[in-house]
Image (cartoon, rainbow, N blue to C red; front, side):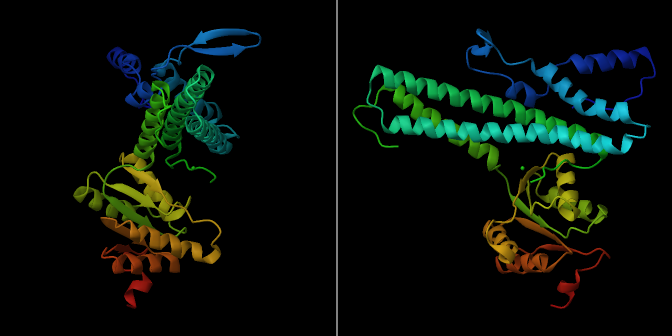
Length: 328
């Protein structure tokens, strides 16, 4: 990612900076803004034209400018304090757009499944199926692109504020099947596998939970660094709190290129939700776990992890064991 603040001392460094800026986009942007679809017809008023994906390097730099310019313009002014809120809103707008596109893509995939189910081999049905499949691919492509922009904007937000960005919330075979229908079925399977890879990252799970009142990052970072030294391909699983220990752990994950999974509270369970989530975490059989001092939810998580054969690393604010662990 491009350096956000840099002092240039001589012409050699200027040349180096230009080389860095023009070397090409990151791998993420190259992948997200590359397409195997032919030029898509885009309607503008009454005219239609063929359009390709935008240039990945231009989008990457523009995304950085969206966030960086807000801080640059408002810095050292009376509005400096609101710069963070404005930048947060920009990232959140990209996040909301990506979520909306993902939902539309899922609806389009269900439409493809429905067409496969009732396919009769007719030319009209095959054309309708191909159009539905194309729409689904276009929506998947758009979702990938906007999600990439959101992730990069979130990284820019963290570079400016030192804090991680977080959201406010985040077939049967029959003789009538033709080659077109089978292709569509393969397409759905490929799409499903792609989603599994994105939403279920591979690697040993390290569970993490802590209270919302935490503000000292040092013991948490130290514990996470020790775990990563033993499990370099770890996937960090947090309990998805936007403040306190979880937010500190998620910031560490972003800084150390660690894949992150946020497991929020299950809905509709009231006061039982936290305990049910703890049971689900233990059922995942994490390779390691860190539980920071917090409420009874953290005490319960430490207990169920121990019963599942996972001995969690316990951290308190005073450097010793949490109060509920000392009375065992």
